[in-house]
Length: 220
Image (cartoon, rainbow, N blue to C red; front, side, top):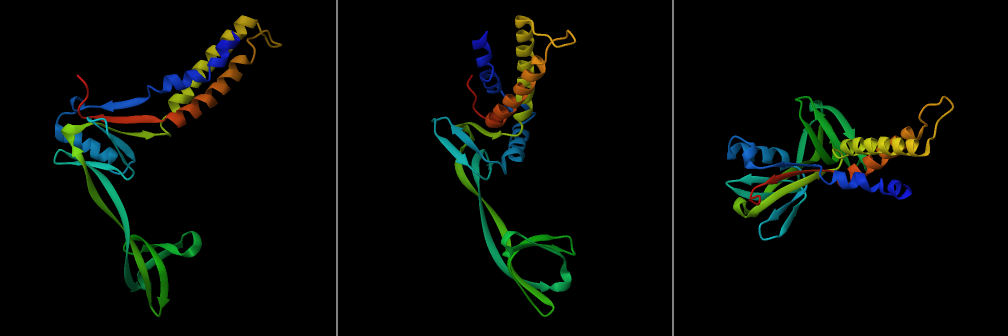
């Protein structure tokens, strides 16, 4: 029985490896809808693409599909020198170190800037602009799948799995050892093991995460 309880921390990990949402073109009305769903999910998320030749491409800023071709998103930042009237600024919030700031303009626009300097009725700065470009990866017919992992989504199923295992472990122990509290009710083993199970399951779920997989050429 002791060996059984020692194995309990491993069980949530084994169960959580199945935490995956997998999609193929059969799950959508058309190829266009399939690609559109992929772009909405992956355009700004880190992940990896597994190709049919067993090579793996890691992308940190997202991936998109254009014209039946997979591209990784390349993000870069450049600065443009500008000067505006001080009356156009509604609010100014400095970031850490006071080297950069976020300007909320009266027209509703919000911009990130650095190198702020005021002179008379105007404010000069360098506006931060994020540029996105696409880097060729492979034609879709050469891609096995693309996936990314959300560590926070895995916490809930991990906690539920841990809770269930904790209840089972506490019940088995109470029945096996006949432990009772002062009111002749099942002892607190169930509650103790449930709490331990939730903690272990949550940690395991966070580490393993929930995988989202788009399969383009799944095995038959």
